[in-house]
Length: 522
Image (cartoon, rainbow, N blue to C red):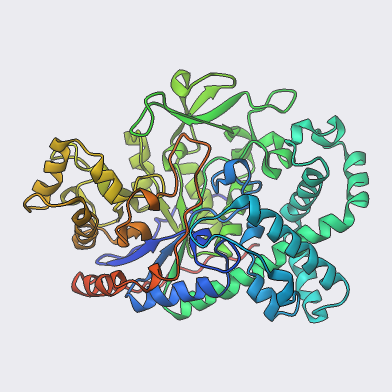
């Protein structure tokens, strides 16, 4: 293996760069099929961003969701979520009929209990039609896709087929010979489940095809896409099942330690996520090949990646398996600079944004700054009365991405309504304004973000729309009731976008960017 190139990284954002964008997950887009997808609603959203002078669209992780329908608990790091396949585009492609896609759905929330069986039925019908000869012209591209991505697609397709066979059970509850990946048992399963495996492969091909088209359309409109890569993987995933040697597991392939964070802003007992943690020694000896392959897979669909829980590259909070809370964990070193050197060597550039929130120690900042990776600031965290709070704009370095709030925060309006009087006064004092109503806060914090020296300013769509509690996407530490929020067509025609266009022009944040080309796989 070649040694990593020691040359310095080029920063993602050049000096003087100033741009803005919106945060909206794909599932939250309007569509007539119960959940946002990669079809017309996504194209209309890109048009709306373009018209409003925005050059960035940030989404949440795009993988197939498992526990709690959370995009941060994906069944694989490498594949797309089949729920995001656009039925409209499948009809255009001649793989479905309009009558196949009829259904009654909520337009304001994702009802997963309705959407999941509906989308699975559509994908089964699509596979039946494709196998029967519909769109034979796609067969060479499909076969090339399966061949070029076999290193992860074969394991994932078998994993999903087995999961369906065993009624969604965790893979550790499958017959031991399958959970332990005995080669003869896997070979038998591939023969017996060949049709189901091919159906999974086709769904991934269609997702890849639709995602590529959307990415190219976005580029034609001057809109770049920011994806999101969870640091850890789900315990019930093809990642862990197919690569147990990369994780700290016991002899029964159960996690010896699980991930979390110590007590913080979101939870007095910390957060116990339950994800298995990595064996960095083993990964390092491979040059972090599996980790870099994860990045390549996501870069097929996006331009830049937000590295969730960036602080874990320096050190992660490991909690002994079975502990009732995260309070008993300890910090364990991560791969640090060695990983980013290897990534730069293999990718040719580092198209990353660091989600460096939480307990940030000097080693985290050192790695971030060594590779000139933009850090993250959240205005909602800034108003504790401390003038040196790093989330206040006067403290920012230019190589920063500022948010009014994130998918884990309350909407800015809800957040302000829950603040103690002292902190409410702190907000207005920093804004140098007299105290006003809660409905006035979100526009003012957007204005504050856009006027800051941060290279990139982003606000979630619910903040632009000045929504309260009804616009919240996720409450950290809770397993139920998250990830359901959707925008309606009416919301996307709101005058807020005209206001945002004018603000962006006044703030000189309409910056375009020429992103560095990634190295091809050698």
